[in-house]
Length: 319
Image 1: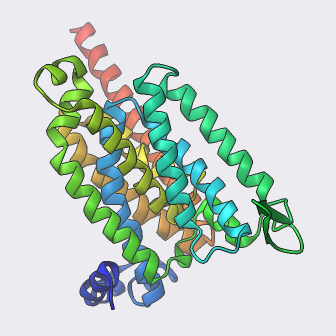
Image 2 (image 1 turned 135 degrees about the vertical axis):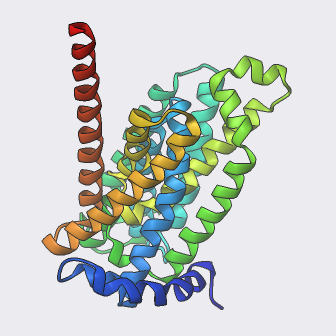
């Protein structure tokens, strides 16, 4: 039975093949003609859409670092899954990520720790767990030991989760990514007014009867699930690049929150398109190149904005 992702791929594949001759480069056009590459490109664009929406809300709620924290948690969980020979290690990541997101939200809401402190502790702890587990021969729980005869170490598969590898995305991954994206977009749309109001003025939101606590917890869980979906595309160490950089770039030029959300989609798609093109032609990692393009794009827009303002302020002072 075909899932949502496979059905979507079948629907858009003819259009992708038709524009392949227009694409630059020697290798990049294959992303529009070969199924393996089409799957990777579609997954990247789909997750970019939901990451852009999520990132816009993360910035106005001052939660930019939670994506990075959850991504590190995901890597630790994936490492445990790999050592335990799990069929689908991301299932471990999903459980650990959701639990960590809930813990961070609880610590923050109860004011036991501020958000950044809680994220830092959990992030470093889980990343360390992953690195330690990869050096162990076996993991023993309640007398049951699983593992290999030798430590796994940093293998190409582990590197794919750390830095991202689009070409390792299969039909199951594509179905998962598309399903998560669809559900997340629907939930974020349903919570739009509540998220915006509680971010601007939580006290006023409570007075209006908006369930601020429930919205905050739901948002944290959605963030965790989306971040886990991004790990194979851009890597656990680089998730923030796609989750935050396009939204931060959009804030430099956007005039309103709604315009920033639209601009975030443009900047995110641009970073993914150019990043995948450069990685294909230069033979570099796709996740790292997407992150680099996103960072350079932010720098270019910010420098242009500063230069533009300085020029016009100078002219006004002269006049």
